[in-house]
Length: 345
Image (cartoon, rainbow, N blue to C red):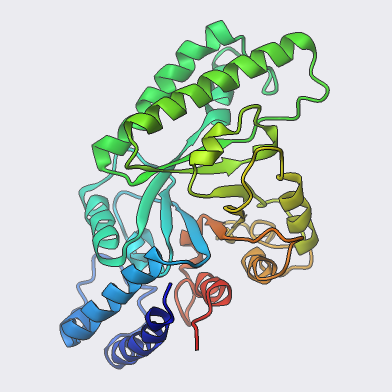
């Protein structure tokens, strides 16, 4: 990306933030039922805001570390700005809706707004392991049991048909293909046979879908080292590796290193951590072992050297819980953004 884009953004953004500070009070406690006629930057200076959005869209098309977020959109009667993806920081590149079906009209309006104005991509996750777990639960099988392919494939096809239908129904920009899998080192012959057949069927379906939806983006989330056939990763824009259970930045490095495998491109790798959970009174979700925030640890880690492998993407799971901060909404997400993509001076 040309430096002029980055140079312009801080200037425009500073002017916008100053204008907003004059007329806006802290909106994190506002509810949809209260019609507060607060002046917005659009109404105060539409030309300035339009220039900012143009620079923002150009920035997202250029070279920078990508930021993916998973947004909890389970609430369909919004009672707070926290339920709106329009309040997610503008520099977030991709928002994955955690509940992709049954979108309300106001959600569709929000999606179009952030896509058209801010250049944000909206996707959702299709999870192979979740489908397999649902099948095992239906048959009351042990969670770790590998389903018999000839019985499982029909269930998987039906599940994927429903899941993938949301792309066209709600005009998503693409999907995140989740696949954790497991190590094959100690599998017996029968288990390996079924495991291979199930993965092959899944990957073939996803590749066929992508061939018919070439304009839609695919992101991979999971453990690429467990894939027998990594062909799908070569089509993926990013490869995101879960690090939500890591307790230190050293574990980030270990998880990252374990994900490197033969025929897996490492030029699009990154880690995903969780934001804190407002219901987690013990402060275990979204924290490292020393009590520091996982998001802050990810910011430090992503800007460090890792044996020649560049970190090109990071992710935050359940980002909406970072909204609630009396000083600045999404304060930790914003700090991550400014750390991994500092403005060129």
